[in-house]
Length: 207
Image 1 (cartoon, rainbow, N blue to C red):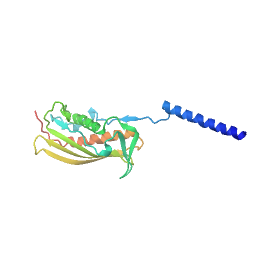
Image 2: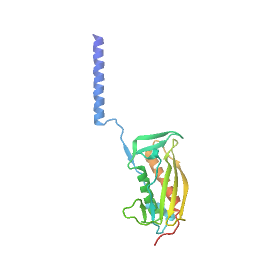
Image 3: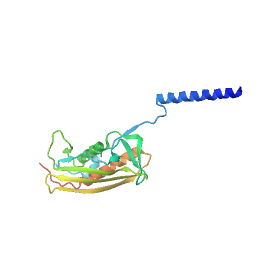
Image 4: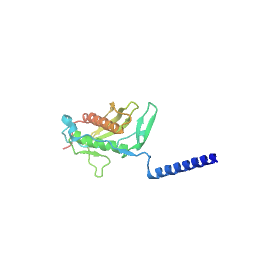
């Protein structure tokens, strides 16, 4: 008799636990919260004395990304051959669009110009230079270090005005669990890349 009572109590407890679990799922209790992040451009005052005061027309092509970065999940590198994809920390926009958007804003501030556009344009304007950027690395590694590496090409209005370089930027160390700090560090690395490219743009523009 006692054994039957104990068994009945156990079954009742399991049933109540199951009901509570279902209720929690329905209410959303205990489920992870999805967070969305955006890269940020440099502030207007950050250009400082390095700002280029010139009337250059610069057109920026959509940034190219490797396949493993072309996703909404924020990517972390765990080693030379291992990646981790965030399940709850996501980009608020396609990463290639976000990088291109920030580059347009950064170059506009660095060059103190409103003549920086993203391609394609609805009303095409002949630029002085077209910029093509291919990101190869753009993530935080297992030590919390930001790495950006990119190939970029500037093509001028004339055939002899085309040149390109490879840039590799090592950012500072940030907390491996601090996504806010990681996105801020990635934004800073992107700003550094824009400064490097802006310094190489010839100071010859159309009137």
